[in-house]
Amino acid sequence: MHHQVLFFGLSCCEQTRIFSTDNALVANIVSVPHTQEEYARTVALLDELIDEVGEAEDHPLASLMETLGSLIEAYEDDRLPEPMENPITTLRILMEEQGMSADDLSEIGAPQTIAAILAGRQELTATQIRWLARCFHVSPAVFC
Picture (cartoon, rainbow, N blue to C red):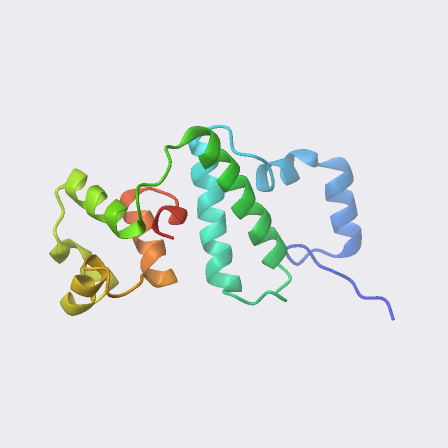
């Protein structure tokens, strides 16, 4: 039995045409980001994939999600400073730099939840990490 793997809903023939004649399209999706704009675009695409795929390792886009994560990591390793001591310390420093207080984090939970996170008694969830990454314009990896 022949199984057809679809890439973004494209038929096998469409995939072949794109991969063989339009490498620019593929390069725009799967390439190492070299600029802040390319990096931001890759992070945004990964965020969309995380929302779609979740933790389903058998999802057809799971390997693309993993690849994009590796490309983002390569960019960050080359261009961004190392994350600070731990995610909560990093969060506290980012909050201080932005003049934010715990009240400004209401999007990630109730005051008790935020207090527990900042005290290190509760770990951040994937949803909270995505929100914080968008809020502070950093990679989600900063909070992992």
